Image (cartoon, rainbow, N blue to C red; front, side, top):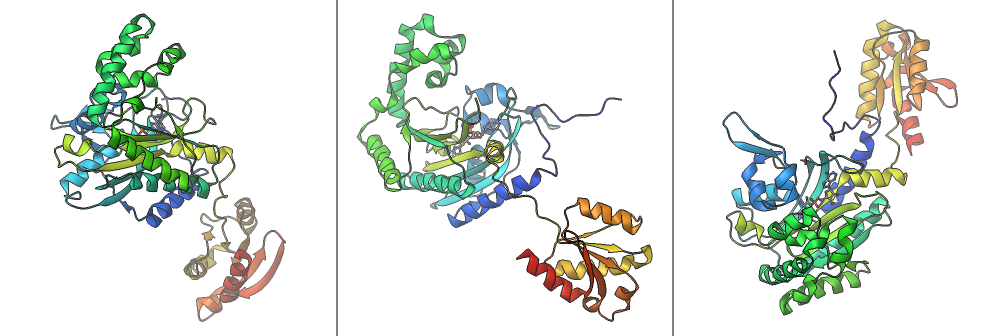
Length: 424
Ligand code: HAM
């Protein structure tokens, strides 16, 4: 019988790799906490309708990438392809947006049925941040400063920030008409995908990856020329706040996003170190989404980072610390001293040490051989003397320094001192 494999584009994180995820996640949690964002957790399954109404019916995600199915009640459900829609749904449901500012973050797996390749998976992890109730550019600056801070904390270099403004919906409508008129003059040069988008989602043509479209897109009208006074001021204020923090950015008037809910400021952080999948973080303003989902209008701004891509960058740059080493392995010279092994191990663990107990029997020689392979600094061997002590802290063990290949007798409280000293 053939062994069952994981689903294409969905990957296990094996035990030799999990420490990297833990290290990254702990930096992210600390960052969010220091910027006073609170964690929100939402289900991975939602009604399909939620994503259709928020991300947009004619986006790639909703048209062809969602994992949708009918459940036993014949309800159409979808695995979440992103986190923003769920956070908004949850906030409306629980009244979080009612006359309140909210700063929220989430971390979790998202699902998109895309063609898998390096950096693009069908199950991937995002760290997302969303702020509600602040319409001004300062919240945008706060989040971009937070991201710049994050790259520094992680030691990541070479990430480039691109920003753009998609204006208000009224400004975008006028721009769209101009854009469509421009492409209609060059209909014979459009590829099939762009022709389709001309009627469904013309802004997305600008984002085409087809080299044939590049020259045409380069000369297309740009949204920035269509911004009114208010939108221009807003975008300028963001830029001056970034300038004051010496955060470098490039205004890319062709930056449009693959999700329909954006307006005004949008941005992406891009690297050239990951081939075609170079966007590591993306986001923007989406004030229109709340009313679209039936709530009162409310300002909203956020982003999501693709963690699989960040892990790849950090791995390539050798930025991860090795997994935590075991401080002590506790062994029994004979099986009858096993109870002493567990007692001693418990005292050591309560003192904060990382302690491995050998299980499964075998000769002391074999046990030692296995312990050496585990990169353990010290090994304790329990024997008759260990069980003779009145209290476990006084129990005498044989303490072996594996690297130095020396052995001495010590009681458990001395062991704690010695091991803690070498831990630093
Ligand atoms: P997005 O651009 O669809 O935006 O995704 C954000 C990031 O998730 C991407 O820049 C990329 O790093 C990562 N990502 C997306 N798809 C994949 C994939 N198939 N495999 C690996 N990584 C992937 C959003 O999801 C919005 N919700 C961001 C946002 C939050 N906007 C406002 N708030």
